[in-house]
Amino acid sequence: MLRRTVLCLMVALLSAAASAASPRPGEMPPDASALGVDRQGNAINLSEHRGKIVVVTFWASWCGPCRRELPMLEGLQKVVGKDALQVFAVNWKEPRSDFVRITRDRNWPRLDYLHDAKGELGERYGIVAIPHMFVIGHDGEIAYTHRGYGADELPQIIDEILNLLPEDVRNRPAGRL
Image (cartoon, rainbow, N blue to C red; front, side, top):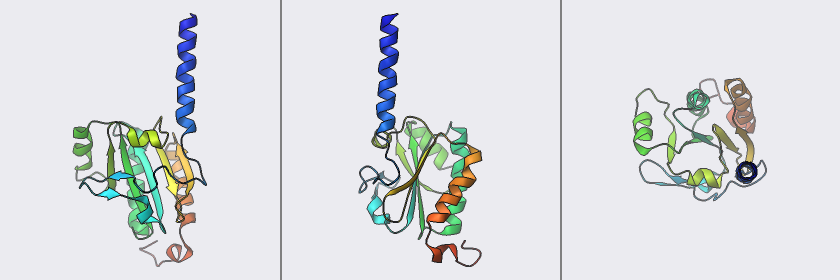
């Protein structure tokens, strides 16, 4: 009985430590200069996107809320434009073959995808559950974080992202925003 209690306490402490490592609003994202490598093998550096809003979202194909958020993020990026909004969708802890199969599907949202098969990037971001999103402001600091959200929260998340956009981007003619 004591052994089980100690084991449960250790698991709880490890989970708390992992979640505590998750960056918070007002902080810089971990390794802000190197997010990872895209499917073509090009390095993704967050610092190169400073000046625009960047969304880094961790997802998996089996995650229902993730599958609902990705098309929304694709549409938002398309309307706003990649000059002002960049979305990186990080596939978390799925086999490479599953990641490649799903992201190559012609009906799958067109975003910039990264693959985190071993969860190493997720570990730096304190990911313990998905979906988990980081909205990074034009200054490079995290403006918002969202963990374990559902479809009901997506309109609020969209509003947060839109409110971070510069006024000239928000006031673009219809068709651009």
